[in-house]
Image (cartoon, rainbow, N blue to C red; front, side, top):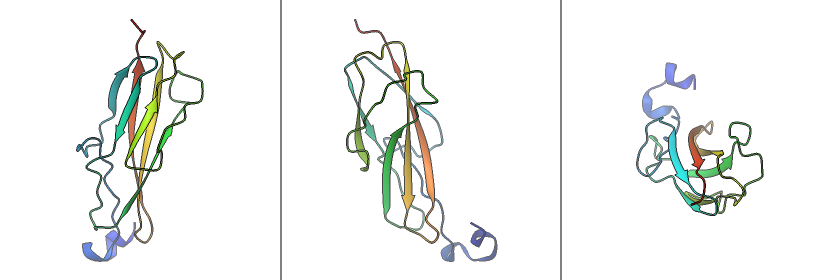
Length: 122
């Protein structure tokens, strides 16, 4: 990162932008779902200012949410993934972290948080 201070913009690597359905702000994404739903996770709009290819990784951040069970994200290493909402998760939250990594030197990572609030099933 110190390259930003001593080199021209074109000679330094810059962190990618982690997108959510086209939005590249840093805002936390707030969603609601019901037990048994499948939540579509979409990193569309993610990009690298230097034009480097990107890799994606979605993971749950169990310590931040209130649901204590394990949740396996489907296609967790792709731009688009799916969060299966556990049937016993009503009244809880599941926090999901998107990691977007470029292949610059050094590789840089940006993050985006998605909070899924699970409502009671009707």
